[in-house]
Length: 447
Image (cartoon, rainbow, N blue to C red; front, side, top):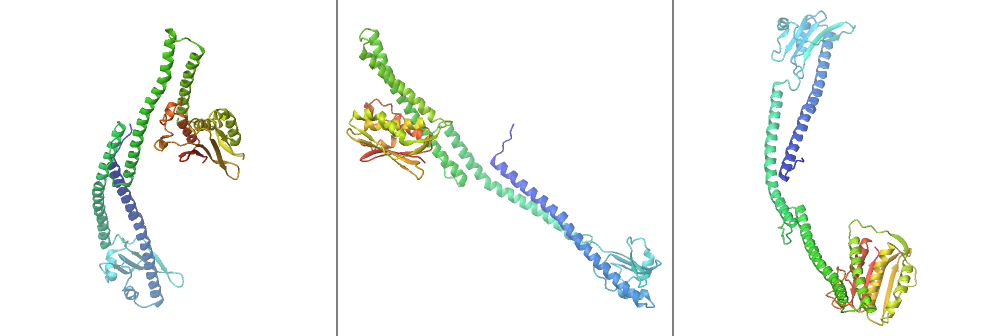
């Protein structure tokens, strides 16, 4: 089972994880980085102290004074870096000088009482002839070993801990006050989307303060409008399909019943009428099947490069006789053009456009087919223009499924021809535009 978290919980967890990571990194930096710096600083001071002691002992050895102990007392009157202790002996191990931080100037007597039990590391100072002149042992306290510094480090860790707690609590409180409104907005948005999913189509969205939520709200309004429109179209389409199917079926049923009752005879004229209604019914079913297939998300076109000019010449020969019945003629360019498309689908689209132009165009006129090509003779657009106009109120719906103008309702068309044309154009990722002013033009742009 997958665990689910609310927006507030996720952000609070993010705040806590960020602070924990910050504390681990800061503690590591202080523990390792600061210790390394202090150790390096201590090593430098210890080296400098040893150099100072060695130099002073070499100077005392070269002076050959009668009272070495007195000379040492004067030589080390001002020690740098304040070592914890300093013990100096001669080559035989006799204590000549001793010093402790809190007991400066105690001299030899105090050193004899202490003995040599405390010093652990002895350094040797040689005379000019190479013999051992002095031996000494000293200890320089590290930064943390000094009492004042120890208090400082302890106080620093306490301040760090208190600062972390205060910052953590402040961040949690601020995160809560910032995230709580976001949670309420997200819950309101989710509730509205659930209402849309449950079938409501008048859901309103309040103004969102978060840009991403506002984008979701705007997209949801568009989705709601689209769903409402699609549902209306689906309802209208279902009613229109039922009506268009009912008409030929009713005619067929009535004619067949009349023939069966002996009212009509099954003569040639009657059979032609029945065949016509059957053909109309078959054409409507095929058109619905093709449109459904074209609008399927997984439909793929079988595109190849072929001559658009040859295709137009074939269409001209096919529709020449039908156009002549209305005193119309087809005009096509004589120039060469090519197009990359599914030839069967493009043929069907142009077939529908020409059929409409012949059926609804002005009689005794010319249907002009024009196109434009680029430098490689590739067609960029194609236009089919005929005399006659489309009602401006109907023009925005000319590509809707089963939509027909008042004039075309008296004809045998199914109302799917232009819907199929648009579906074919869109499956090729082209565009189509309908214009109607003095003439009617359908323009396909192959882009």
